[in-house]
Image (cartoon, rainbow, N blue to C red; front, side, top):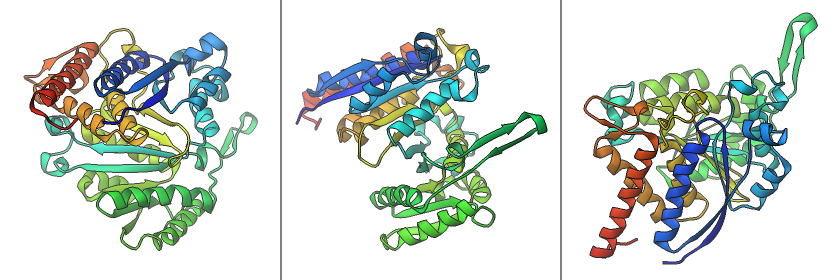
Length: 371
């Protein structure tokens, strides 16, 4: 077993962010100790907490620390406390600024309905039993980064969607590579019958597809895709789409699992520089300090970090297996509770997962399993 040394920038953020991030960091520490790795953690203010402490959602030292790290772990940001600020000064502007500064133009969200949680999915078992797909979202363009205008005097506003073929090419090529590593199926989502940017998107994806003749490509309009995700989610394997559509569709797809708290995500630059890992849920300020929030999204984001940034697939599988074992034993946090299950506080649930990881390591040493 080859040990590695990595630096991880930790951005706890706001609301429940510090709680769920703490749970993920402890598991990463356990992983490093058990497998002989060295993970160095550096914590920085970000989002609303940074506004309160430093006067800006993305302080200079935070950005410097993120640039120097091998990976970044984010909790969650935002809350009503800062909603009265101008858009450019709110916590969310710090996240957009971080993505832009690090050129994080790809977002990857795995959508998987875990076996023990079939009962909390809003869909019937036969529709979600094999639900396991990835959404690749373009993250640095589209309407989020176009011109924004608000004219109060005539009650009009304008947001401009803007894409270049080069921006579409780089995220499409990444999606094709993900599809090649899975089942060889890619669904590209657009609105090419109405939008100029979507017309460019479809033409560009079609052109890139010639480089990947082994991949089966399907083009869907976004309204149809939204319906198909509900009707037959298991038809998808890898989905690639634009920033706005990806934002909406990935949250819709997350609902298939029964709770948005279960979904991890990665924002990256196709293998270059540090990637950003975060659960897709919000800061849930009403739950802050109550120890009731689920840490699963953050913990699974940490496992994703091990696999995608550090090439530690075995270590990632151990954490994911520990999550499944705890769920199989009937333990839940309140957001994923079912009749007959034992509801734990967030920290207790995280401790159960840590305990399962330790138990599996003991068994591996005793019986000579591969670690």
